[in-house]
Amino acid sequence: MNSTKTIDVRTGVSLAEFTTLNIGGPARFFVRAENESQVSEAVAFASAKELDLFVLGGGSNILVSDAGFSGLVLQIALKGVISEPAAGGARLPSEPPVSIDVRHQPSASADGSDRDNISLSVQAGEEWDEFVAYCVDHDLAGIECLSGIPGLIGGTPVQNVGAYGQEVSETIVSVRCLDRITGDLAELTNSDCGFGYRTSIFNSTMRERYIVLSVTYRLQLGGEPKIVYKDVREYLENVSAGAGSVVTLRQTRDAVLQIRRAKSMVIHRNDPNSRSAGSFFKNPIVNKEKVADISLKMNTATVPHFIVDENLVKIPAAWLMESSGYKKGYTTGNVGLSTNHTLAIINRGNASALELVGFMTEIQSKVETDFGIDLKPEPVFVGFD
Image 1: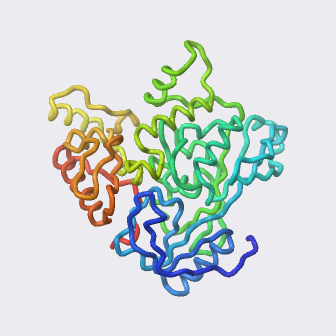
Image 2: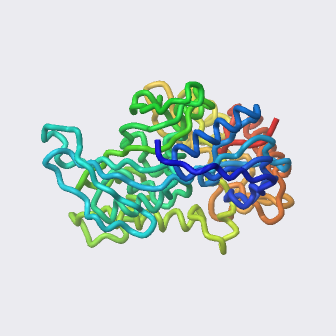
Image 3: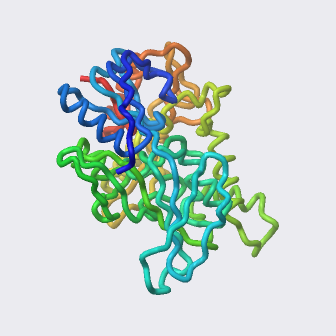
């Protein structure tokens, strides 16, 4: 592990300022860890005092209770990126953009099978979108459709972050973690992580066991952008130079950013619609028979859905909400829905966690009554009983 200095344990730190919803009470104890040793020391501190521990990343996908958190909040602030190109493959330039610290080291691979691939080991405290921008700038394909997503690197494997037809599980090679049970470092492979739709072992079967320290991604040098999502494809068709023109990673990133900005899904302090936790509900995956049931109930043959496999389909949560009367711009008290994106529950100003949870429950109840589908929230709930 890295050299360490004694951790600085603060008390009564407001957590609202660390979240994109800007909601939540104080942390009883708060530690900012800038290296692996400080992470271990903070975990030991919590264990010695028998405190609950919450690991804080970018705060873009959490809702903190009004009472705050009675244990220790550990903010992960580890920085740096290591480039590990395969033997004989190209290397990245040594000049990184601001705040991205790239160092190079030889790959352990001895054959030329990965000549066009470059692995980047990224510390958990790096900003995700800055990393995406770095990869696009250096012609590395694999995460271009994940542009504009707020948060840090460490959160990406936890939820298997995905958008516009791409998921981080497609490029993650391994995840370096601290095992809170043994106190040892663990290197988990992609298959070890149990990736699924917005899930992994980190937020399901082993939710409290591992703390992500860094993630290694394998990206394709000179690879083509992944353009499978309808919105992205249509946007690019409208701005392309014509039939047969080659779409670049840069154009794909720009398209995704424009689409997300139009939905207020790129965080901006002057945009009240971005005071949210992103898409609040997961798109439910149901049996195909459910689509037929809804079609009959709604007297329509156009229930939107996406094929998952021969038995399952995914229905857009936004369509279910709108069909139940919750459209863009719907408001109640200090909370509501974004005027640009149905799935984003927003803090309209001075909202409490209690208000937001009440609104969430109202939506879930109505959709359950109308369609027999239980909408599952995406954010992590912190400090709730």
